Image (tube, rainbow, N blue to C red):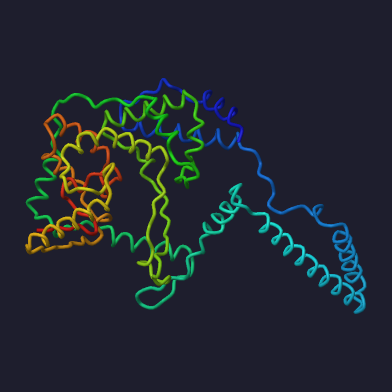
Length: 406
């Protein structure tokens, strides 16, 4: 990749005098920026080397044998004599044996050259482990098999649709009416949230992990780290407009869903696969920026027994707390009871509107409105990752193993 040409082309195509006064303007700006980055990256990329090695790397006697085999094939195709056919078959089998031996020797020499000092051993190991086998045929509930990719995709789609449904039965009907009324009411006048600076965007991009699989737009963190200053300013302008209008662009909501087989589960059942969503890189950057503004408000309202999704905390600390409670009860000769609750699909099924309603009990009035303005950017049926960071604070759902000791 010619990064200098990439940055030059982006600078020539990006226009900072963009009007972002409506949700449609934000969608158009996101589409324009994404298209400009993609075209600049494709035009600045070099043609990769061919995967097949040329025949000039083969020994001289092998190339001579290949030439003799081709001549024997041409003679047999012209004469159709059995003797010419036998000669052609003999040269073909001999060439196959020699090429197989050369391939085996090259593999042996390559494995012998691997070392831990230059990371060549770990790179080859990761390359082997990353190879994912294709999805085998799936079985329908009626016993029929699904063979084609379209049939498998429809089976996974139906399974995910039936799985990611909210727990409607845990919320009374009058509560749902309160939720709808609260969310349809306009927000009171408050101070605007703190704007996002270009230095913050650049810092988050540079701190992002490299070699991660991109979303549907194919923009990786490595490409984003090479963006010129003009592109960073355009991206910051879009982020601030999203905060001001409480709107999340439609293009950044699309994701590629990868189904990964759970260990020890039957491969012919759609329920045996775990979905992983590949989101666009710029949407994840915005979520990190929003989380940075939410955590100072949320941390002050976290209970002391909350250990998940917190900095400098771990589930090991929760285990130590439980062990301490048990040890104290044994020393004082008290009765120690424990209740372990497991919420089915706690991190899959939720109602984001109910979560927004619970923000009424968080912080001061100004902090509530700041939370609402930033969280209402996340719309739709599914919860965004930034909400998962503090969903336990609102007691909306619990982790898969949350204990209460008395």
